[in-house]
Length: 172
Image (cartoon, rainbow, N blue to C red):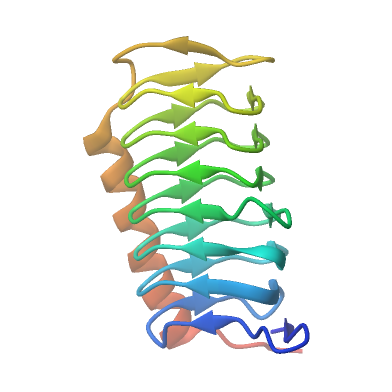
């Protein structure tokens, strides 16, 4: 897997995490215990840094970046959907970021919240706990997300990561 230092900054990957060989990690990036980073995801920590908590899935094609001022922080037991883009934002524990959605600078996706597919969470927007953010720009639907379902989704990816670490092999 391409893991790159940038100056003195080197990615820090927990030994129980699974990072797909075709994911790219650069610079100030930390991956927590039992987390998974899937094929073609790019985590480019060339500024304030990127932090991924424990048991979190960063799915195929997701792009996580930061700025010189704003870190990108993703909590524990989160799912970051395929092709999502996170930049300089905070995603709290148990949240789900849907496929092809965008979460921008200083936005906060609170505990157990869900950002729907293709939604855009704009700068400094707050998605409350257990709410859904849907549309472009995102509009909030309160108490519409299921923290328990988000936790089941996160656990599913922890188990997939263990399977991949144990059995995936290249055959060409």
